[in-house]
Image (cartoon, rainbow, N blue to C red; front, side, top):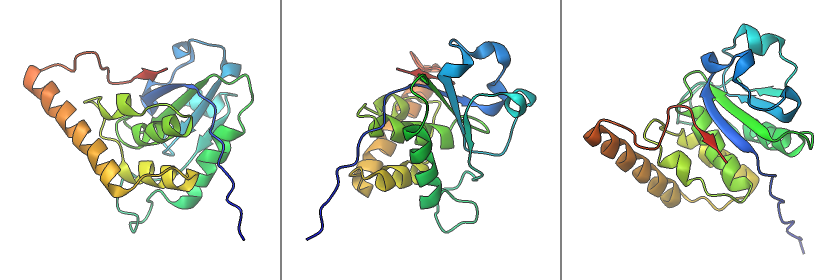
Length: 182
């Protein structure tokens, strides 16, 4: 008889979703020793090249078909999960970034929020984001979260509705382009 081990949650972080060009020395609200960075691109900045902040760089392109070259895969998800589980205890802020901060990083951030037991609703309701569903699904499934395609489709629908609503009123309301999620 095979015993199923319960996957332990990752701890909760303050999650910052942003584009790589937004990184600079003076943007951090907390000391560098309390920060970690996940880059879902090889695009970089001089600051990111020289910083001592722990970072994980995953070279993927923004596609949602797992058969395409450069797509997010299970081994990428395993690296993300290992990274967030093994961050030093003093890390409180997690910066999740991709080239433009609108697709891969929100998909990753939403999955990390679910892994920590939080809701991912704020990501999907932000009209500035179009979370990459491949990144989201692969991370959730690799972590062991129940995430059938219908639940992903519901999230995508919420996101489309938020975008339409923002377009109708010509503003995004309480949401910002680069968001901090508590």
